[in-house]
Length: 496
Ligand code: G3H
Image (cartoon, rainbow, N blue to C red; front, side):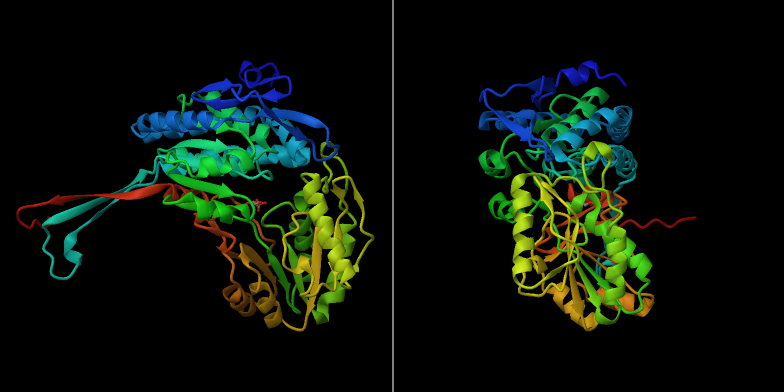
């Protein structure tokens, strides 16, 4: 596909990108832009608009008007829009992947996969949405009632969904919000992550090319510290769907009387029992711990290995870790620079704290700028920060435990509860441990993962509120409305 597509050219002047409201790409009247630096060499790759509160008001106003028309658009037509947008993503996957590589540092293959995964997600949301139907409830199932009234119950849109995706999946974790929102009859206002903004904006390009009515999809940019509170406290938001870190807890406190769909990260534990297939477990741990340099909320963030197999498991993990390639995202390396210097410094702080407290590194700690080489940290203990905190980087704590019960006990002490996993060949043990783990999902003999995107995805404790997954998100983004038909006299259908 040509880079000269006029729809792509409208989005920017050189490296300066516009925001998108009411079907138009605009420069902010603030006259200010925010620079995005590449994670890997910290050069400026893009600038995005620092939107004003007036521009945010306009986004909400226009989305409200568009939503009222959209809600009256037949479902098959809504589905058609999603399918068309999905096709645009597929047609331009290579081009849309470029900002993901540049501003987020995801390797090119994974960036392209993310775009295609989002296209599949939109198609699935369209298919799922057209099959959402209401119910009819007769009254006489309730004691003492005659058949003289019927409740017709259906799902109706909430209105305007404020979508706040994170940097690590700037396209997919925005698509996972706007696909269900739109098919359910809502309009969306999107607040992009600062780093990742240009990637997310390509979803607007896809919907614009697909023929979305003006105002249905709106994207504003700006620093969370400047416009975040204004956006989440705005009376125009009828639901907030947020994915990110612990700042989400602050969003919850500030949001007020609106439904929330929150995913705030995890400290996903991997428990390896003495009867586990260690080949399988070690492969899953390395993949789960280090893919996208550990910058996934569902990354394996701590390993609990039962003493009797700990050495053998660690040997296998080290051998597999040695195969990871480290370097530039354009070279499709497994490990690339983490998102920014603040993040790299934070990860380093956790590593140094563990070292000072007696942890054993399987390799020398190595950092070049924001590129941190993958590291397994052995003999991690409860007094170390890395036992509890989420590094969001390629460093993996390894804890030796006397038995599985101790592993479950330590895993459950975490304030988070997104996913967990257990490796064992005993199905009874697997189910027992899965039941005991306080997480939204437990993977048995596999690494934590959100996908496939139609699976329910939810965090317990500080990991979140509500459930994602396409069907679940459609439900979260709608509310029940009932119509009760009252009859003057009872009426029973007699059949033949
Ligand atoms: O980072 C949070 C994502 O929801 C994780 O998604 O399991 O597909 O990597 P993933």
